[in-house]
Length: 451
Image (cartoon, rainbow, N blue to C red; front, side):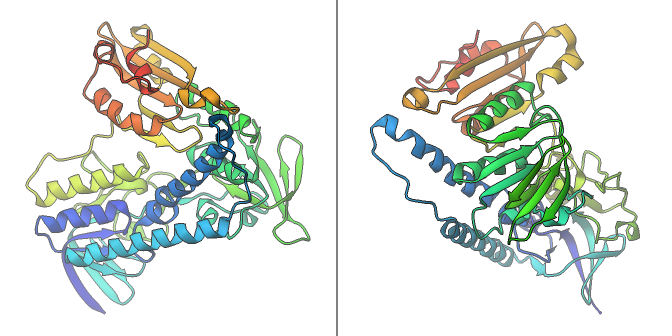
């Protein structure tokens, strides 16, 4: 067995691991990345990037419904799913190549194979033994498949990107952001979609305004939503790609072409043999880390989805870069703050949010909060036969009305949220928004004119 030693070793070649290794190398560290699959991790291969391309396609589908109102005579003559898939996959493959070339350019070694711990800061990859002064675990997460009878007949979000044809009838199990995003894409591109939601609404982890308004939009787009229900059993029928689904509300669905599990994700740690390194985890497999990304083992760190905190690509990248700056860049106090992280959900319409929900603010501050709301149809829908409401909420605290939560669903919410996230993070007050001159006519101006 050959052995190699590095200053910095990243287990996982996704966004976080690569970002950390590249930053470490820029500070002069000898770095390496271990990744058995395609470089770029979940985000590039089966997450953010291909999902956003599908969202654009779905958005064009919605736009076709609005052309007539603006005077265009356009008819649909079909949709070519295989052609879109081919273009999307080629785009992702180019990104894989860009990551590979970046590692090579930075002098970062890439070991292609699964890593397994054999001691603290020591792993094996095939017949190679790797040690490091500093080792970070950045293996990301995996979709959860429940122990439901016949669950293996369904697919996860990973399987969604392998579909060779647009399924005619789909059941989506789940209520989180992956479930609502993929359900919306499938419906906009022509599938008949039923969502099975365990509780009373989707996106329960977000502000109530967001979940309620999105439920209305999903239903308006023709998506059937079964609330307070779960899938009890899936069975394959005689014809190819046809399933029968039994739901806990006592109903059954036959001739379903695909069942999509989107009920959550879990840390990807099962094959690492973390006990061999002494790395502490909590129930579900998430690696325990402190504010500096340190695990229970000296010199071993964890970043990204594998920690169970804020499972977002930019979070993993930011945590990885700050870690490398602290270890090799002389910035002893450099760390990521997990407070006030903005996020976007690519539904139709999109959602942007930053800060705490109204419920969270009330639980912490009681009567010291004040909430501002607005709801309207954006000008884009002035001539549309399929209008979708835009809704916004500002959550403020104290006499100075410091903004601690900003939640938007509507056209443009995805792009406008970045700027407002900066303002919220800097401690903006409601008065600061009021004193900002509005950009007219836009939906964003409503956030600085609310009363």
